[in-house]
Amino acid sequence: TADYGGGSVNSSGVAYFKDKGVGLDFDFDLFNIKLSFLQKSNASFDFRGGINGDNIPYSITGALKLKEVNLLESINGWLDLSSMSSSSQKNKLMFKNNFVIESRKPIRIKNNLMDIQVDSKLNLRGDNLSPRIDGKLNIIPGLSKVFLKGNMFSVTDGAVRLRKSNGK
Image 1 (cartoon, rainbow, N blue to C red):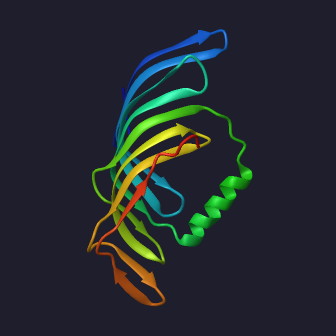
Image 2: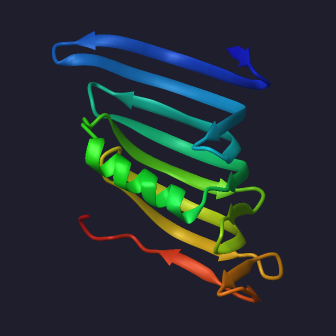
C-alpha cells in the first residue's frame, strides 16, 4: 500500500521465476489517480484489477472507472501524435487486455471543431499492440456542440457504438 500525490495504490500478489521468464499473479487497486498527458489533456480515475500469467504477455483484467477526462488537444495535435506514434514505435507484445472502462462523469472532448461530452461503457480487449474496444459512447445532448464554418450547432442526440470485430 502506498499514497502518492493524493492517490493511493494497494497491491498484493507474487512474482515467481519459471524456465521461460517471470510469472506474475497480482491484484491491485489504484484510487484517485490524476494524470496529465499530451499538452492540455488530463484524467482522474480508479482501477481495480489484476495482472497475471506465467510469462509475457501477461493478462490485465479489471475495471477502469473514469472520474473525469478532459481531452483538450487541437485536431492538429491529435494528428501529429498519430503520425509520430506510428512511425517511431518499436513495440513488443507485453500485455493481453480484458477490462471494462466506464465514465462516472461525462468525458469532455474540446478542440477547434467541437466541444462534446460523452458517457462511456466500453470493453478493452486484445493486447498492447492491437487493442480492441467495443461498447457505446453516448453524446450528452444540450452540452455538446460542433463548430463548422463559423457556425455553432448543438447536438440533440448521438451515440457511437463500437462493435466487436472477428479476428482483428
